[in-house]
Length: 530
View 1: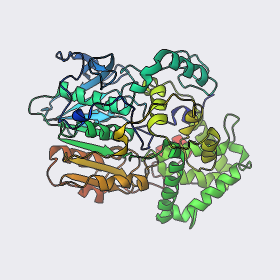
View 2 (view 1 turned 135 degrees about the vertical axis):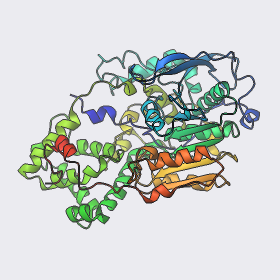
View 3 (view 1 turned 90 degrees about the vertical axis):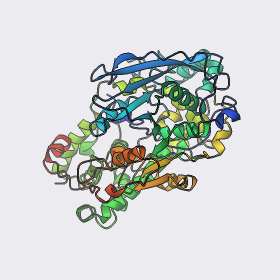
């Protein structure tokens, strides 16, 4: 049995956060980078796009929207050379007036546009006058996805996930099939894809905006470097700064966990339950779990401290469920019969096998490693043992470096280009949204971005209680997303005053577990704590 969290630990909206570099000699020329838009020789063809009906949801359900695939240059510096497919989905909400276009860039690296299918539909219920464009990053989804068919077969050892024993054969297969092509699956070429797509799809008198989340902000920033004047505004949500290292992802998550437990200590209810130093309490708990504490909740598939570490890392990403983390720690520490009964229900939930999701099927493992090790790593490189030590010392971690540890030092990397060492210089309006409790793009590191966008219409908005993906983790007392409200205010008036008043009406973190139906589902009891 594979615990669910192990299957999904690297997924969510752009869970991989780092800064870093770009590609080698594959970027557009400097003259193109300074241009207001793509090169006039953007590719082998500029024939009108053919949009075909397709379902909004990749599972084949929901509203009928439009899809198209273009032939984009494999190498942006050789626009008339070999091509790849780049896929985009366009959603025009019923009754909307198409007043503006919003391009939504997923994170990873490795994520397709899949999560935005549901998010765009949700936003459209309040803001129907937006045309949503959802591209798949090259190497993922339906954009010439890079993969290992044998090792990713559902019947293989790890199912669609690639196991440690499968990676050597997968990597050998990738090298044999892709060879020199691999170096062109990089951020700079993906940014050029975006510029080409926008140029070929833009409508007369319709302003264009680009929204990126997590690695999507890194992608959007590279786009802004290449096309500093093409769009009317760029939004960076859960921002990835230049120069960071994905090798520190699990370490960052643990730092965010400490900040979260500090919030618990300041909360009247949580502080009363967890004592004056909740972080020290949970660290002591993990030390005990490693020596066999609370054996009644142990399962053979995974050590309890690893299961809880991954659970806490995953829950920190979810604004609706993270409030349960202290309750889990409290019960595990006390470990009375009633706690064992409740936690056994929780463990069963955490380890229950789930059907393979469409998001996982579209994920690009090869693309992820290709960009991570080339653009988002550090020198000297940590070893697999170093990465394991970081995880083992953590209280909360999605263990995203497990997969990286299988191929670290073995991947055929490309050389970063000059874009990696500088920031975009542009007067284009920019909005940066950052959560204070984000375990994937750590606030302390993200703040570096603040000093690089200080123009007249460039804004930094910090929401202390938000987690990863601010538009999905900043609910107000009116049951509306503050992040989405700020985003839409920005794209409706990119050069106007930004209304951030909703940050004063954010819902507090629900540490008490007030939803009895959720408590019953998670623990088999009405009370999450008792």
